[in-house]
Image 1 (tube, rainbow, N blue to C red):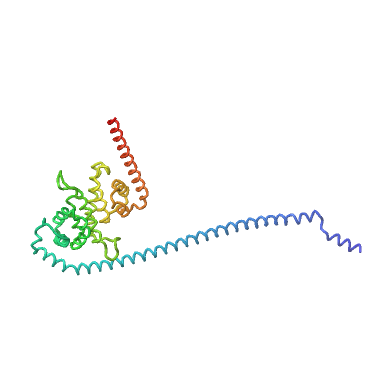
Image 2: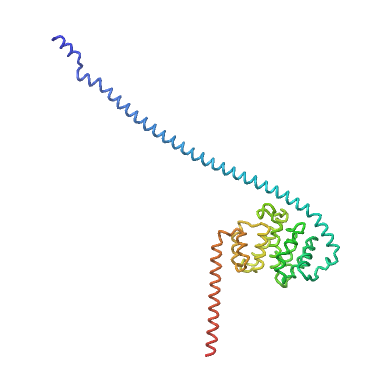
Length: 339
């Protein structure tokens, strides 16, 4: 019994020895715990980083897919537009071929017509007016056309419907119109005393040209104007702007000239974004003309229309107040003189 107890006691380690044995294990445990904590934090950081990368890639992928869809749509629209233009070119060519013989015959008849030589003869009815205008257009006699038209201001209402019909007979209507109005636009060539203002005739001819040069298939988005004529029209517009600066700006130009210039820009499709401020000033200066709102929209001034309307109303209000004040002064003078 004693020996067993002794043996048992001998097998129990000393408390000092126990502390020496367990102390390194506890430090190791703390080290491993710290290592596990660091690994856990690092893993969480890496996981968050990769989740963020995955989210960014997802957003970029969606954005790329959206751009691809937009590109596909734009490509489809472009192909459809090209197809429409090709169709319109074919249609225009067919129309030209169908009318070629008719115009040639009509031109020969016009040359042989006894009345065709009388450029300044009187025309009694609307039918004769149309035939006369067509005669000039068939022969591409721009000067004769202009001389005849500018003398018919009294028949202005009837001319609005007949001039487009006549211009359709021209081989090159756009070139014909430029040559016709060149007598007074961009520079009046009639000398120091030009006489009557012919801005109304310029505007009439330019307005009448639009339905003639519009693409029969695509519409107003494409004008049947040759690059050479369009370049010539651009040069004329630049010349007019130079003359405007030489005259001292918008305040020193006549309203008919402004109307002619703006209609010229719209008719030949040569609107420039860098000139929008100039267009706005010109529209405001001639806002009382009934065609100006439509011209302003055609010039791309849709976003600026509220400001234009406000300035126009204020100008009219100031003018009305000034007129009222002037009438009051006149009335007071008359009363004082009577007293």
